Length: 203
Image (cartoon, rainbow, N blue to C red; front, top):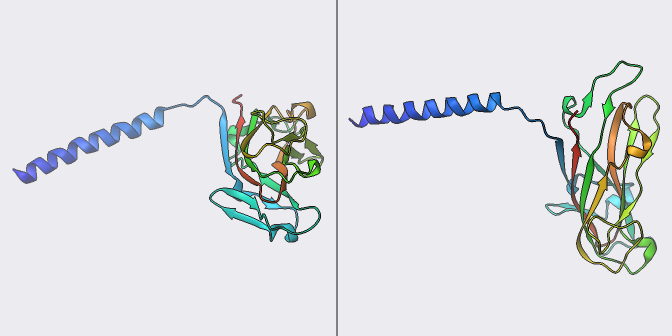
């Protein structure tokens, strides 16, 4: 009886698992493509700054003890597109691949230095493969307002959020073959880039 019961349970589980696999295969997602990237993927502009960069589960932090008059690092955080097909629509070679970047949310931790020239600010950039030209969004600074500010703010501390809406629309990226999408930030010592979430609207 015990053997028969075990076989019965195994049969039921097999049917259930088979049904779930079938359901997964028939599911179609029509929403935006979402790319989540840890701040731990960020890299500094040069070796000297990289030596003062900490990579850990909290992202990329500029060492509070970083010496020098500038006391900040230029960090570059890639927006990983992972696979290609969900992010673009094929067009003739003369047009290129249409790319549309919807929103980019960046979470940071700011430890202000008290100097306006050293406040934490980020922008989004891309490069056209055919021309090699680079395109940049406006800069947003970590501040008291959720989503960021267009002006520098060194009085606000803690965990803050920047939001870019259609950051590259002014550069008419739709219709360009894009090779790199990057978040570039100026980060004062003691501050950090925690991570980002980027959305690519469905076509």
